[in-house]
Image (cartoon, rainbow, N blue to C red; front, side):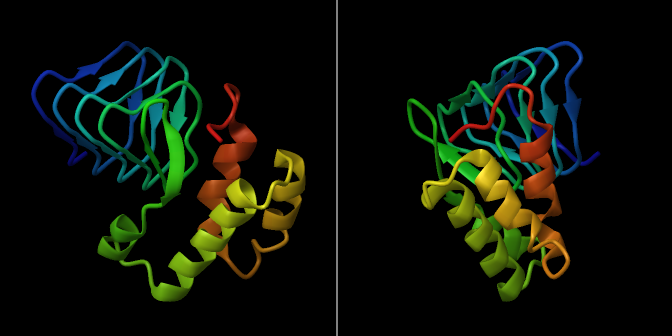
Length: 150
């Protein structure tokens, strides 16, 4: 519902797309891609088959992702790399400063501290009771079958 699909986009067979997503010109999704809610794809970006793109993620121009992207993460470059948290998107969707800070700290734990995926998940799970906004981030990583883009 309420997705904006611009010119020359291709959404292949068996894709599942959430609500309120933006697909800029020439975005391409291969088959069986799952896209969460409030995801933004910049022009000429795309996802490899069977990838999962988490809620509130942002893929920059020309970013073709070969692996899963957790919720809230911004991806850009060639090759694509995580660049931080989509803080502007979160502000626009009503996340408060504390929630955004918690998401940024979770990103830092997963991507910047040099921990293995399992070590990072142990630390992140310990925060769930007091930081429920981390559920989409953590569950996307745990459910990944293609691996998470790091």
